[in-house]
Length: 111
Length: 114
Image 1 (cartoon, rainbow over the protein chains, first blue to last red):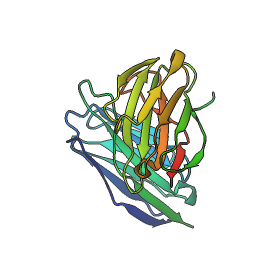
Image 2: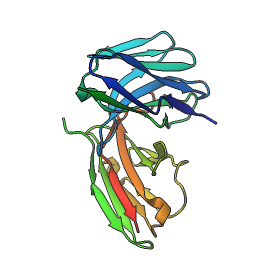
Image 3: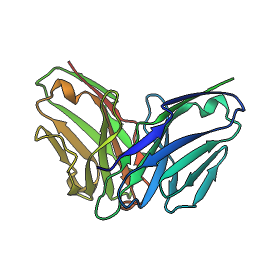
Image 4: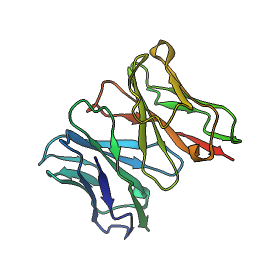
């Protein structure tokens, strides 16, 4: 069964303290992976799509990387406004048309 | 450009009643998806429309759920009759094409069945 696992479940950082979030997957024949940010009471906000191992994408303080088995979301010098739940979702291969989501990492950045 | 919109934002109904959720996708997006998150669980796929046609409804939990997309524009998701386990947040997403095109999500409808 396709599965996406995110760790840690929750992470508290001091402002400026860099760290990484992990997304590992057993989605068969993964065609790619999405990263989303979700604020309380809102829908997931698209951040990145990664399609192949070795690919990297950056946006402001965020950098997403992809290997054959996992993806990392690196947060450099985070600010309190980066506090949110970060979700990853796998894109299966073949004819599957649905995303497989992880349960998310709840990030809190303290001032 | 307007994003995906959903109505209502919150609905509280009693067990056995009917509720209809509405989603308006981004203009020009033929692909529309419904997902839901029940308490403590990850977001799960329900179904996928391309224009007015259902492409994949493998995630629909049972026949109490009925989704429609008349004219290939907005979509509705009806739950009839609602059960306690239907409580959760229902998200709609749209995309310009099928996977791996990125999907843009609406704010969700929080459904509470009492």
